[in-house]
Every structure is written in structure tokens, then in C-alpha cells.
Amino acid sequence: MTNSNTRRRKCIPLVPISPLVKASIQAKQAYSEATEKLSQAKQQKQHVDSLRRLAEDTKLERRRMETLEHDMESVAFATALNWDPNVLAKQVAAVNCQLFQRAILDKRWLCHLDKSRTRLDGLDDFGRYLTHNLAHQLIVGSELTPASSVVPPFVNQHHQLITHWVQVAYLLVHAYRDFSGFAAIMKALAFPEVRRLRKLWRGCPARTRDMYNDLLHLVSPSNGYQAYHTWLKNTLDLFQQSSSATLVIPWLLPHFASIRSIIKEYAAVTSAVLSAPGARKLAKVVDCLNTCQQGGLVMGTTTTETGRHVSLKPVHVEGLRSTIVPPTDLNRLVPGDLVVYHWLVSRAYLDKQQLVQESLEVKPLAKDELPLAYDEEEEEDEDFMFEQEFHIEIESTTTPQPPSASNSDEDTKDITPEKQQQLKANDPPETKATSTTTATTTTNDSSSSTQSATSTAIKKSRLSPTAPEFVPSNKTLVSSSTAAIATPTTSSEEDPEEQWHGYMYYERKGETKTTISDDDEDEIWNGYPSPSTQSEESSEEEEEWKGYTAYKMEQDWKQEINHKHHDGWQV
Image 1 (cartoon, rainbow, N blue to C red):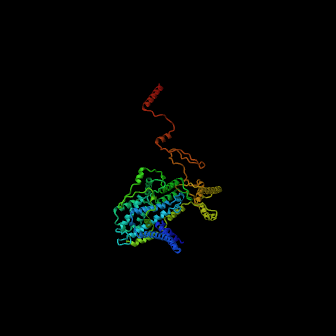
Image 2: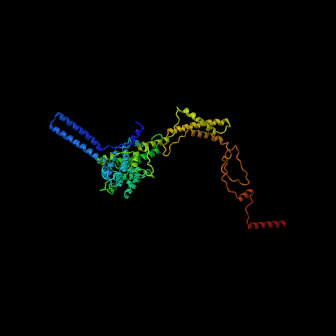
Image 3: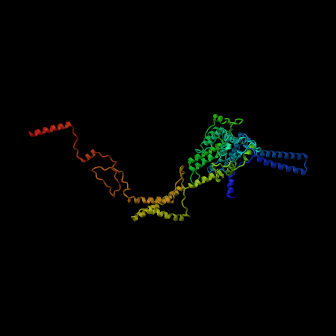
């Protein structure tokens, strides 16, 4: 099988087989067996009573087979307007509940984003199938007229299809808690191939548009699908019942996006082992999915009487005949209406390219309208694209491994000229033979130490929750080792302007500038500089102390004593 056929087969989703198809196959086999028994009994010329009984069995199996075929043919050309929005919403929830119950929510397989082993691929495929076939129905429905007697019932207004499916989406999320089917319908309504058909949206009432905008907020990817996670938490708090009840049918995209971000942030680069914070976050995601599937008290909340009353509050939608009471256990919806089940899973599936071509046939491009862009990669399975993107990110963040023994010679041939150039550029001029020998020994020691450090770093993983481990390459090892060599030898021969002589200080008057001898490398710290004043300068010039400054009275006393002493000397 070629790659194109493989890719095309991956684009086609797998949907459940209609129960009417299964019953029709069994009825045909039973009718053929009854006909064969009747023919054998006629050949053997059995009793009339046995022949009459076999003939009645044959008629019964034939009638059963014809009834099933009539039921399947009756909905072959039907539209969604044949049924009430509540009937469609209930049947979509029944199919999704049946598919979600088959899932095996194993933490190891969820950690590897494996939907095939967890059996979540069926739920995802049905959602993708529902999106594309609904978009096809809306595009074709825009061209239906009252004269289209082939398609019952008659479509008098085109906007009825939009209003009908918006009401179905509203009931799915508020009455039947099926977020997978709800997201599929909202995605189909948001397709550019559908939005460009103004005929569908022109006559929609204001209430339908407001309801659509409110529902569109729940599938917004802003803040990591915060609106969806808030709705899910509030719903689980209200509807937690017994451990055997299916409470909610989740939307897989936000949960798998959370798992992907946890693995990307908290997992080791070379393995899928998570650190302690990452393991706790992953456990919360898995517990949330288990609570949706099996109920119980996994989320750590208790059910109160107020919560039960709120959970059973009827839901009313304008245009419906009666209110809808939300069921506590979604398993009671299975299997549902078999005729609606058959119509739901037997619609045409068109890929992205076919939808674009169909939309252009219904309404050609206008002069000022941009062409509809479609990519072949969008036709592939979303899981395949998702895993490929994650695989590329893992490869880009892996640390370089040390060279093997087989390629060691080739690596040394490529690296040696670079090492020589870097050593010549970084090494100082040779002054003594001892300096060169010490440099070579230090290079060997540094290279051996770095090699041992890298080997231990590769063996031991610290599982950092913020960034992967850094293992330097060969170029960084060479540059770091040569820098370690050049630092001690060039420190004594650098320019005097580049040498650090301590903090700058102001020179005082009368002091000579002290110089540091070349032999003594230790600098003497003289303290922080202080501002110089005139009083300090004068005190430094006069080293002898001449006593305190006398006041005026003391001067008078001194003059009198000197005068008396002078008079006595004259006598």
C-alpha cells in the first residue's frame, strides 16, 4: 500500500455500525435458513403440520427483514428537521456514552498519548465524523427549496437548520453533559465553508445568535481551555453519584493538551519519567477522566441534597414542546432510537478539500472574497499530527550524546584543527618552558574533569521541572579549557590600566603618594576616604600643642600678673 493510500485511509474515521444494519444482516441469514429448511421439508414430503410451521417461520423472517429494510430506506434522504432537537441530542449523547464506556483510562498509555490502546480513538473519530457530515448537511441544506419533494420535511426557511443544530448543541452541554458531541457541532458551525454562506445565517433570530455566541465561549482555547475546565469542575461537583454512573462525556482535546504540556515541562528528555510535581498533575488529569467515566468521589467533593436538586433541574429551550430533565446516569440513554441511530451514522463524510469544493459550487467566490485555504495535512488524523508535533519537539530538545568509539577517529580529525586555532588565539606568548608544561597539564586535567562531569550528568538526571540539563558540546569544552589556561598566566602581564588597585581615594595635602612594591602583591586598605577641611590642614602643619584658647578675662589676669612681676623686679 502506498503512502497516499495510507494517508487517505487515516483520514476516514471509524464510526459504529448501525444496529439496524446488524439486525438486517441477521434477519437475512435467518430468512435464508428458514427458506432452505422449507425446501428440504418439501423434498422429503414431511407432514403437513411441519410444512405449515416452516412456512409461517419463513414468512415471519421475511416480514422482519422487510421491516428493517423499510426503516433504513425511510431515513435515507431525511434531514435533521425530521426530528426534534431533543431526540437528536439524546441520540448523539447515547452514541458517545457507548464509545466512552469502552475506554481504558490507563495512566501509562495516556502519558504516551496513545488513543488506540486507551480505546479513545472511537470517541475521537465519531466527533470528527459528526463535524464533517454536519458541515456537508448545512452546505447542501442552503440550496433546499420547498419544491424539493424528495427531501422531507420541506425547508421553508434556510436558517431553520442553524437554529435546529444550535438547540441540539445547547441540550448536549446543559441537559446531557456530552461535551464531545457539543464541541463537534460547534466546530462544524464555525467552519469557513459554512460561515461564508450568508443564506444560512441571514434569517437567524437574535436569540439564536446570542445562544451561539454564549456556547462558543465554552470551546474557547484561551488560558488553556479555562472555560471548559471550569464548566467540567462545576458539573462534576453537582452530578457525583455512585461509582457505576457515567457523569460526563469529556472533550478529549483539552485533556490531551494538558497531558502534553505536563510531559513537555516535567518529563526527562530521554525518558517518559515524570518528576514529583508532574506526576501529581498527571494524576489529577487521569482522576478527572475516571470521574467522568465511573463517578465516585475521586475529585474529593461530597454530594449534598442541594447539589442533587440543582442537577435535576429541568432544562427548557424555546421551541420545544416540553422541558428536559437531565439524567443522572448517561448509560440509561443507550442504545436510544435505532432509526435515529442509523440516520446519524449513515451520513456522507467529506474531507476538508471536498467541503471546500462543495461550498464553492454552492456559492462561487466573490471579487473581494479571499480563497478558502485548505491543507492536505489537515485531512490527516488529528492524533497523528499531534504526536508528530510532540515527537519533533522532543528531538529538538534532546542533549547531545558523547561520541561513540567507532566514530572517535573521524570526530578527532574534524575537531583538532578547531582546537589548534582556538589554542593559538587564546594562549599567551611563551615566556618560560615551565609555563607551557603547566598549561598542558592543566588542559589535560580540565578535559578529563569535564569529560567525567558530562558522563555523570548523562547518567544522572535531576528531572528539573523548568529546563532540561545542559551538557556542553566539544566546542564549548575547548573554549572553557583554554580560557582556564589563559587566566592565571596573563594576569601578571596584562596592562596596568586593566589591573585593579582597590577603591580610589583622595590624596591629602602634605602626604606623599605611596607606591606598592612589585614584590608585595597584597594591597593595604587605608579605609574609606574622608573630606578634607581647612582646620585639619592647619592642625597637621602645627604639630605642637599650645594650649586652649584663653578668654578675655583670663587675658586681663595674665597682664596684671606680668605687670606686678615687672614692678617687683625693678625694686
